[in-house]
Length: 135
Image 1 (cartoon, rainbow, N blue to C red):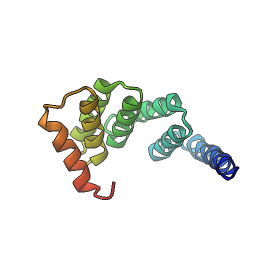
Image 2: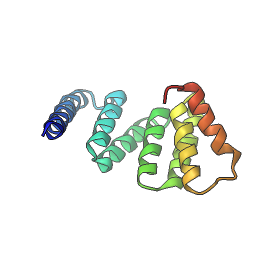
Image 3: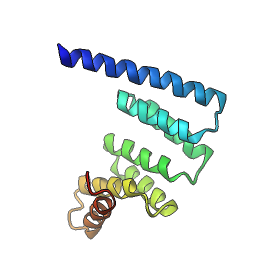
Image 4: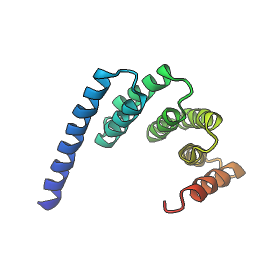
């Protein structure tokens, strides 16, 4: 019973957060950081189609937003669209070579494509772990 109550509370918190961040975006439609926060909230709610649309909108507004490409790569991976995940990860890394999430997403996608022979998988995960050692 406790888990169910916690799940309901979490859902309500996400819903309230989406409403709040949507008001920020309504007031300032070009607030890309707010849009990325909303995309993450959608993803956490399981509304990946909304998260995907939101990150794509950020990319449309700012084609050089590395965080949006990295987030969209994560969403591609969750859809098992690994080639698109690699493409978006590569774009994120091109924009910001320090984007460790992009390296992790690219490594995961290559692994899922059974590209076990690629030394790139090891380097992607190694770069990601070196820059984020506690994950």
